[in-house]
Length: 259
Image (cartoon, rainbow, N blue to C red; front, top):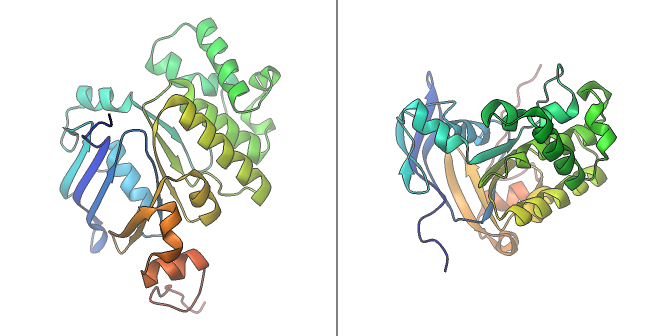
């Protein structure tokens, strides 16, 4: 029986910077074990949404619950407990250049979990294998990796602690279409293997269609449409229709200034 309490529940979330409103009463629920992808153009608040859930930003108003527990205003020890449930693949992998590949993968295990290095290294090598990388890759530095390999290492790090929740920030940015599809397949496989709840943000519709159970579109700080992947082509929403087909003409007007 499915858990009736959403894994993540966001209600009336507001966040601005100075005079600029970024999130304007955003509402979103993600069920346990569900993969939700939030789509939207650049500057629509996708990354700000993630940072609010992670506690890197504090909203002016609204509620963010994880497993039914309010996280807005939470003390640091309680926040740390929540963060221990979360893994994250950052937009550009965000690997530590001063650490080897395996140390990057094992970072959360050693620094966050206090695991001994030998044990953490074994897990790191296993996770690298899970994303299709040979053990020898673990000895390299991030600077020696291609863009696709860096993404794989970032994914290995995101799953190393076997989190309950994984965030994917623009997982295919900077990759060619074939490598992007490889990363999408790996995301689907690893999320399913862990039984994790996933929240991804992207403007890549090929990625969204492959990794999502459900897609939500953000526009002007609100979720303006949400539904199953197979419903998006018949959403009946002119904003969604314009975005998914990449049309310049439509209700979404890009802010383009002559240089």
